[in-house]
Structure formats: structure tokens, C-alpha cells
Length: 151
Image (tube, rainbow, N blue to C red; front, side):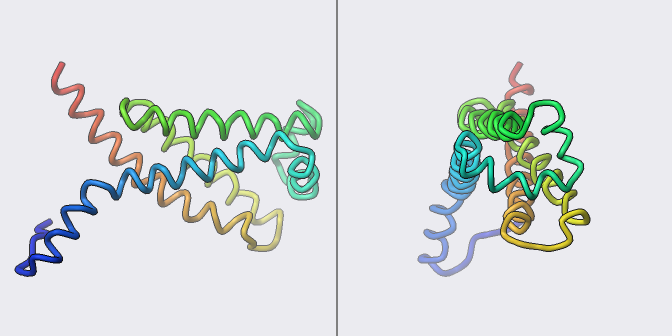
């Protein structure tokens, strides 16, 4: 795709954004997963999730780990995701792993929609996260491919 224009200001903005766009997206997703992953360790989130999860197929987490343990499991998964994305700044394999986990998390949450019967912020954020995960996955797979070519 040809992105240069005849306008110097637009060219400058394009150059700046070309160097920062993926980093900003990655940091945004890291922030969301760090925040929500941390919440899972606190009682207010355990209690908020119980009515949502207990009526869906994810109730299996409560069967396996109990209500608090199910929340902790989700917290561990979200922590692994944001740590992989963080390491992904320098190691594309981990970035790709983190991006794949973002996509899986979003799809898992969206799979609850028929059982929840409503669309709210709990669901809407995951639509955006799936898109962000796909963009990050593509970016990190390209980077990983470049690393593997050099070997």
C-alpha cells in the first residue's frame, strides 16, 4: 500500500504513526488485561462474575475450582496474556502467543452471549479485543518470520 502523499505534514504524521501504532495498540491491550487480570484476585470481582459465569458453560470453572478459584484461574490466564504481550515487545514468539490468547479470550467471552441473553460492556470490550488481537498476531507473526529467516 502506497502511503506517501504530496503534503509534508501528512507524510510526517504517517512516519510518526508508523513507528508507534502497534506499540500503542499493544500497550492498550496490556493495560486492559493487567487491569482485569488483577481485578480477578479481589472479592468485588469474584462476586461480580458469579452471576455471569454461573449461568454459562464457564460454570465448569466453579465446579473445578470453586467460585474464588474460578476467578483466580481467569486472573492467571489474563496475567499470562499481558505478560506474553509485554515480552512480545522484544520477542515476537511471545507477542504472537499473547495475541492468540487475546483472541481466544474474546471468543470465549463472546461465546457466552447466547446464554447471557444481553449485550453489555462485559461483551462489547471483547469485540474490540478480538480485532486488536488479530492485528497484533499478524504483526508478531511477520516479525517472527523475519527472525526465522535470519537463522
